[in-house]
Amino acid sequence: DQNFSCDDAGTVAEKAGAEGRLDIGRIRLRTLTADVRREAETMSPGETTSVFHMSDGLRALLICGVTEPQVAEPNFDDILDQLEQQRLSMIARRYLRDIRRDAIIDYR
Image (cartoon, rainbow, N blue to C red; front, side, top):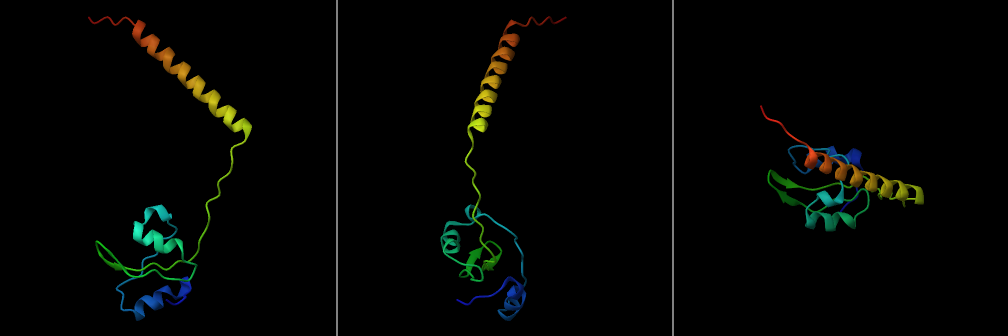
């Protein structure tokens, strides 16, 4: 395993005899297959995965960067607003159900 920069990817692919370089951009780990995900989780920027099979040929991924998802804890007002919206939605569904049940449809 060698370290490369993302700028070197095209040159490295050419030297390896690859037909082309595909920039897949940012991807989430969960979109990768289990084997590739396990390998990629432990890697640092500049490292490449081992070669793996895909439907259209062999692939290797070059890790250009890693970002951790930012998860913000909801505050009290956000939770209260969500509960209020759920309550209003439930009331609206009941109201529409009652209107439909009580409606008289006259076919002529």
